[in-house]
Image 1 (cartoon, helix red, strand yellow):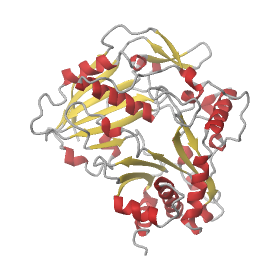
Image 2: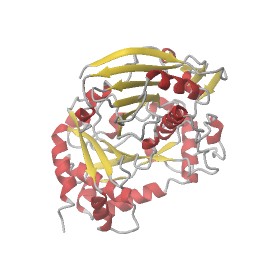
Image 3: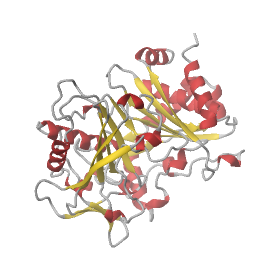
Image 4: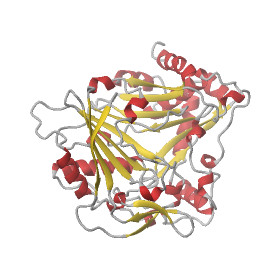
Length: 434
C-alpha cells in the first residue's frame, strides 16, 4: 500500500491556554512507554458534503485543544528525573494523506504493518520534548472512505481517556456541547492512600517464565501473527449458557481464551501461566474518579494458575479464578496498589512491558464496553475501529465491540505463528460440542 502525504501541520490551541508543568502520577509512570493508537474507519455517505475536509478537522482539533490543552504540550523530565507534561501549547501533529487503496482492502484487519501506514510517522529516537503527545492522520481512500489514525501517549492517558479525547474532537467537529469536562489534576488519585500497601501485589511481580523450553525467551525473535475472530450474539449466548450464571460473558470468554492459548502453546501441566486483565478503576475507587479525568486509572487483575489445571479442569474452574481476581479489584486493593507504586524508587523497573505477556503468559484487554463508536465527526459512526500497536507481541488479546451494536464481539489475537492455527481450531471447537 502506498500512502501519499499531502500535508503535515502542527495544530495549536485556538486560544491561549494555561502554561505550566503537569506532574504525572505514579500510575502514569508505571504504564508502557508507548502511544495508544486507534484506527477509525468511515464509509462516505452518498449525500456527504465536505467529507472529513482537512480544514474542518483542523479547526475542530484546534478548538478542542483548549479544554484538552495538555495534549498540545511536551513530555519532559523534572529535577528528579520524573516525567511531567510541559503545557507549552506547542501543538499536535495533523497529517492529511491519500491512497489508491479502498476500505474493503482492510476487511480482515489482520495486517498490522499495513495499518501502521495509516498513522503519522513519529521519530521516537528523538528526545521526548521534541515530539507531540497526540497526532492524527486523515487518510482518504479511492472509494471515498476515510481512516482517522490517531494516537496519544500512554503516560498522558489510558485507553478510556484516549477514547474520550477522540469523542470530544468529534463533538467539536459537529458543533455540539462537549459531553464531558476534561480534568487533568492528578490529585484525584491521592485520596485515602495508605502509608504502606495492605496486599501483596502479584501484578507487579515478574511473570512466570518457561520451565522447559529456553526457545521461548522473550529476546528470541519468534514470528508473530494476528487473527481476528468474530463472536456472534448466538455464539456468545451459547458460550454463556453452558456455564453458571455467576460468571459474566467476559469471564467465561477469558477462561476459554486462556485455555486455548495454553493448549495451542503446548504448555506442560506444571507450567505456571499468568493472565493480565487491565481493569478500569474509575468507578472502583472511593470517591469515584470524575468521568472527565484524562489520565491513567488502569489497574491489572492478574490471575495465575498451572497450565494443567487450566487445560483439564472444567471451564468454570478457570472462570472462578478470573472472577475472584476481578472481584478483588475494589477500593482497598487499588489504593494499596497506589501505595505500592509510591514506595518504588524507580517505576521503570516495574513498568509493564510487552514481553511480560509472551509465552507462557497472556494479556486480555477488554474494550467491548469502551465508547469507540461514539466518534461521529458529522458523517456518522465509524464502520470499524481497530487498536493498532507498532509491533506484534505474543500473547496479546484485544476484545472489541461490533460497530453494529448487536452484542457481537471481535477477538483480535496475537500469538506465535506456529501456535495460531491450533488456537483458532480450539477456540471454535467449543461451539461444535453438544
